[in-house]
Image 1 (cartoon, one colour):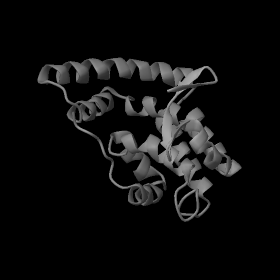
Image 2 (cartoon, one colour):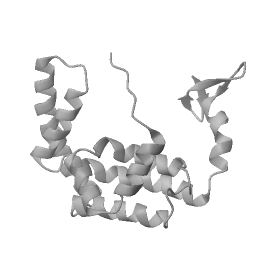
Image 3 (cartoon, helix red, strand yellow):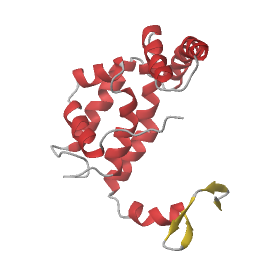
Image 4 (cartoon, one colour):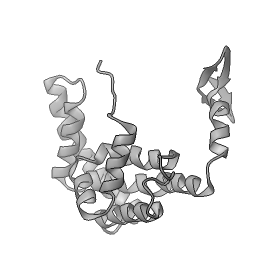
Length: 181
């Protein structure tokens, strides 16, 4: 790790030289279109804030989310039960606070509106990047992938036109990989 603007940032090996991670990827960042950078900012400042109120909207949906988390983690039986039920209860309450904090009147409507906003931004293209995904496509996909098969994600795909783009992204990105401990 190296210091950059008062924060520790990772470093990477380029050839035989160790460089701060941000220097390796900064040129590609600068070559992005203004529209792509704006889209990534929209993900960070808007899209991520409407997810928690959606996936923890009801006690059933909160339990569904934690069921997924506990079934894909390395928990003992007792840990699974405590994490699932305590976590779901806490996140259900947190989601109500987030809904209020971000002034979300109807969380599903906000999610659908975000999906429609994204599909309109595609402007008939397969991806925001054109014929292949760019970093903005990956940012949106990365935020939506974890919720895709939860009730919120299923509803979003069924009630908006984002499903086709999502399936193209799944094909372009491939299967998720994770390491089991």
